[in-house]
Image (cartoon, rainbow, N blue to C red; front, side):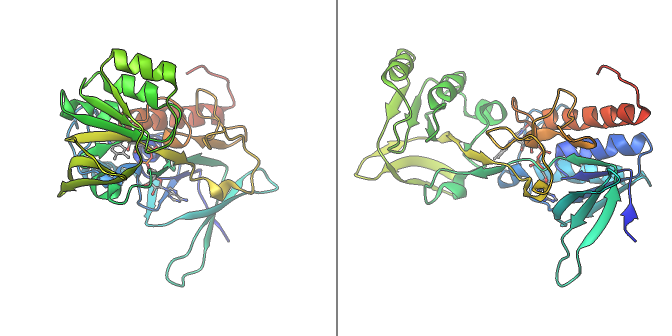
Amino acid sequence: MNENFDCVVIGAGPAGLSATLNLARARHRTLNVDTGRPRNAATLVSHGFITRDGISPRELRQLAVAELTAYPEAQIRERSAVAAVRRRADGAFDVVTAGRGGTPDEVVTTPVVVVATGLREELPAIPSLSAFYGMSIFSCAACDGYAFNGQPLALIGETDDLAVRALLISRWTRDLVVCTNGVAVIGEAEEALLSEMAIVVDRRPIDDLEGEKGAVSAIRFMHGGVRPITGGFIRPRWHHTVDFLSGIEVDVSADGLLVTDRDGRTSVRGLYAAGDAAAPGPQQLIVAAGQGARVAAVITHDGLGVVTSH
Ligand SMILES: Cc1cc2nc3c(=O)[nH]c(=O)nc-3n(C[C@H](O)[C@H](O)[C@H](O)COP(=O)(O)OP(=O)(O)OC[C@H]3O[C@@H](n4cnc5c(N)ncnc54)[C@H](O)[C@@H]3O)c2cc1C
């Protein structure tokens, strides 16, 4: 027989761990399942989380997991992947976790699933980029811009929102070059606007980045030429991580995010989402944690069968 839980939370980033903690505190027997590959795995330091500014992502996670051990209502299965979520005839869900090393798949049954699986990032195809990503090249200006105040920076990307991102990064430096890597994504009007701010647009294809031990020192262009920088930002493309929902007809945005109401309810009854997997807007640790806490409160209230406003 399948094991039963009141709630299953998929993902143990800040969104999923905060949802799990708050569900357990509301006495929901909750299982958290996590593969252990958070979005910020590339970086050693994270910023902007009150009381924890500058903490390593690993330590932040360990602190949150340790807190859960105080609650018999919470269980966490680490290094375990949810392979499928299936709707049952009785309206509950079967959550299938993939077996490892020859062990069979396991199925648990629950009326409530919280998806907190974050995003998968696809970086621009520059050979050494991953050696610098999370060390001196980042994607979130709000998270990492402060450390590079006034320094010569680059914004590298191939998406059509590059000019807007450049304006944002100009809060931290006016010594900024926007590299389109040979892909035309900045129109003439946008280039004129950027040039008023002394932001340079460089449309040359990039050969690679130069630097040592994670510290970038220059961009090398394909047909010659090098531009010194001390840091930078990229604009990744995002992919959702909810293939396990393929058997369920749930609304998904063009970006692949789960569409929710402001309280984290998806279009499917009993299925909720929190954190980067759901929310457009600021993608930060404390925002994801806040959304996890919020969705836990919503689940408790929904279970009472009363309509409340949060
Ligand atoms: C390089 C970098 C630096 C950053 N720095 C900062 C910073 O300094 N400050 C800040 O506030 N934000 C920072 N961010 C953003 C921050 O990492 C995200 O906003 C935050 O991690 C989102 O939390 P989440 O819980 O939604 O998702 P995540 O933290 O990505 O967690 C999702 C979890 O779900 C798991 N998962 C995925 N699929 C499955 C599955 N099928 N089954 C089971 N588990 C699954 C993953 O393994 C992962 O553990 C940074 C991001 C990057 C890329």
